Image (cartoon, rainbow, N blue to C red; front, top):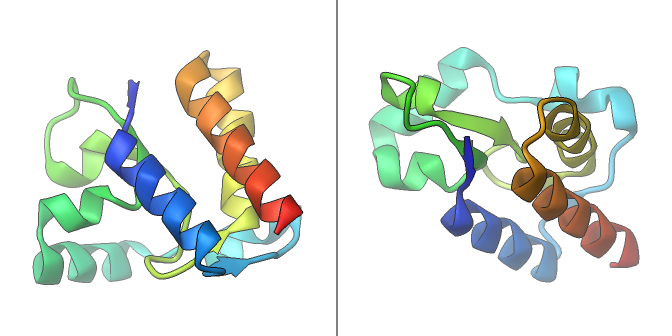
Length: 112
């Protein structure tokens, strides 16, 4: 698992532009895009655009949707709850570069 730098740059740009939902820690299960929404986005925009919404890339996984992990948005805005959830999960599994990127995003969101 490695940090998806294009997604990280996309997330930072969205935060700078104010495209952020400052929701509560436990809201991600309700705010996360559904599998159907993710599939429709992938079909419409292709893998390169789809990848911009996930901070982790696992090159050992097969299939587009399986390769991308650590979503941070609803495919339009960064969600604070997704960043918090991802940071915790990245820490749990030892993905330090992803955890650090998510920590940076949380700081940027909270300062904004």
